[in-house]
Amino acid sequence: MARLIPLILIGLGVYFWLRARKRAASFAETFESEDGTPRR
Image (cartoon, rainbow, N blue to C red; front, side, top):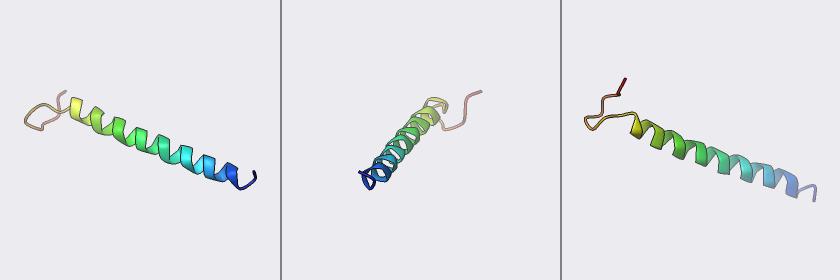
């Protein structure tokens, strides 16, 4: 059990990191117009 806790924490960290990366990529796409310049 003591070995399982760090594995669960590492798994959750990777999961949330991947989710944050995916959200940041989609967020950046929505804030760029078709020609690639950022919209303000």
